[in-house]
Length: 137
Length: 155
Image (cartoon, rainbow over the protein chains, first blue to last red):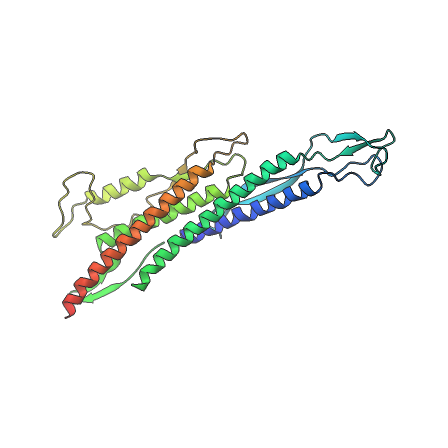
């Protein structure tokens, strides 16, 4: 029984990190066109999560946790748009290094991993309830 | 760990249900399957962790421990094994602790070194769940047989 409890707790840690990943992805998507508010400044920088396996005594196994959020160091795109408040002296404005296609793929992956963790919890739950059914006889 | 202690008191003293070989074997197998489900859960939770290599139960160690237990000669009436692959449930011994997880990479490794393939893991999860439910069904069947015997005796 303790193993099944652990299985659920570990899968729940998976749900947590995938949800956090989804949040960061939606931040990136929402800010895909956010330019700087000061002339010549940097626009929104794409962010991504790093995960790491973490042994948790209370959880009873190696769960997963967010290791850190990093800014993407890919260069910004530039566009000639002198009317933009974020444009530099030369009239070029820096655009965020967010590629919606990459975000979409990442989103699908997060969704798939989330579903797998849900499936895991469901399995552990069924096994537990089948065991408890033995008491009803 | 699964550990049911139901005691039937008879003329000849107490009898622990966990000591009845069939129940004992079922309990061991169920503990093993529950532990396997925990290990698979770790793999699924870490499906996006860079460098993570999935683990699985070392079924060989469990099977050999089971085989070693079954090799011990039992006393009293027992079924004869007609094949070396059959289980002889005449002795009882706790097998928990005889299995452990070991590194078991899936069919594919991504660029960040993660070797978890969700499809492979899901297959293992559903197989483990199916095996577990089979064990529970057998347990119920064995229990109802025991009840039948108790009913006749108390009449």
